[in-house]
Image (cartoon, chains in turn blue, yellow, purple, cyan):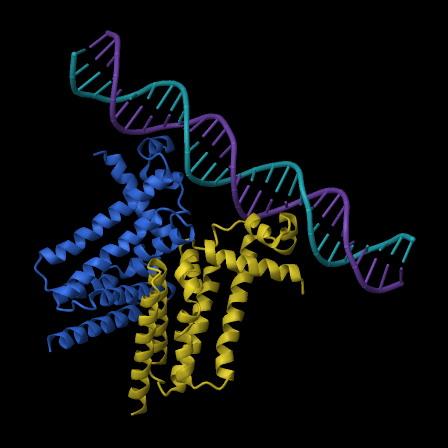
Length: 190
Length: 190
DNA sequence: CACGCTGTAGGTCAATCGTCCTAAATGGGG
DNA sequence: CCCCATTTAGGACGATTGACCTACAGCGTG
């Protein structure tokens, strides 16, 4: 309900993405929002609570996006294509900061941070959603493996696009993934 | 020359991999090596110097491994297959800590750390080496694109293997990458 | 008006970090 | 045996961090 709380979560979300979780301090977030650290402490007692809120927001955002495609009546195959094209949609941010899901998970995994489970839940969201779409396509046996495959390819492309901010590479890999999806689709139909 | 220096670099290499660069302190490394922080400071004046030394060591290690395959007389195609199989060779560490190259780069990129260029050089080492192997296979036109493709796939698989420490997933994806390599090879021969 | 709740501000605390300094130990060459 | 460069030890610093506490401003309600 508090607008201030939402502004804190949004600012933290962005800063965690751009600078990383550990490298972002209370003061950094408070500075961006334009409030005092004390006020910050009123809304969030510990840094882990902010992390939880940020992960919750990220899950909600992605969930809404994915469900939006399904609700819009897109075919399972078109849904998966839309997922692949996220890389193009966010190409600037990805080339600058990598994948918001993958980089957060990697950092938390190294820190042995309890919030790592939440970051894995973000992966799960995509994994399960993709799995359902492949099932809808008729790929009931290997739906999860296909989902993991596409997820892995996306992660890899995002990581390398971050290392080599080359737009052509990103576009080329997206095309290859879409071609792979086509092959899967025609192969399933027959 | 100094054996102590080498022990410091090795310990830092391992800790940077397992906990990350920022989360590893002087005291942590000194504690593992069993020396005082003062002694540490004698060998490395700043933390950035240790990072540079670690990256240098990682490059040297990987370079020796890659060159070893070439010197052993393996065919270009077998060399690339050996690269792909790194994922299996180090599967336990990768599932526990991710890819030593990718995770380090991601962290330094987010920190805007000058050492990020060195981490990119690590990617370059693999990229150029793979590019040469594809060229040796006769793929002179798209050698670099193929190198980037394999590099991206490896990165993605490592990231997801870290998120889902499932050995089967890792093995399945490696097989798919080897099959992809086969397709490239036969396609080139004709 | 007085009360109490929500929200905000700013100071304080202990801990930890990277950095730096000084002093002692070590050990080979004159 | 002593000298001197190399190596090691350990303390001290200034800065920053997450966490915590107290004070008070705004404001609707009784």
